[in-house]
Amino acid sequence: MEEQQMPLHQDRFAEVLAAIQLERGLDDAQLADLLEIGTRQLNNWRAGRQRPHWNKAVRLARKVGMEPKDFMGLEATA
Image (tube, rainbow, N blue to C red; front, side, top):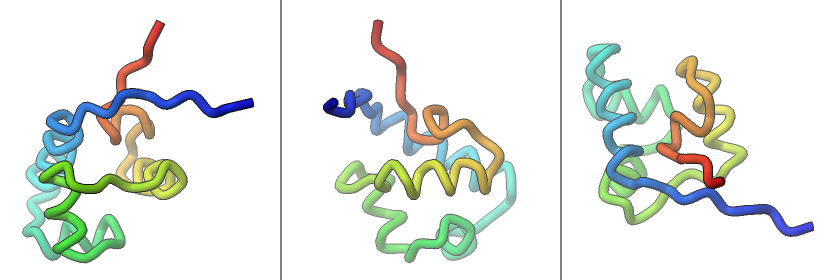
């Protein structure tokens, strides 16, 4: 059975990253450390050039107290 892809809303994902950073009062290096990535990877995520694999997204979402779909900026399709 093929896994269904959910549409990624990159602007929403960037907004989620910004909200986490603002709420916790983190600079870029601190946010990257929290997410267990480098600052270059963080910038790539923000710019939409890359995104975390689903398994990593699930783990990171839990780490920051969010549902994975909310963390990734996904919306369910009917």
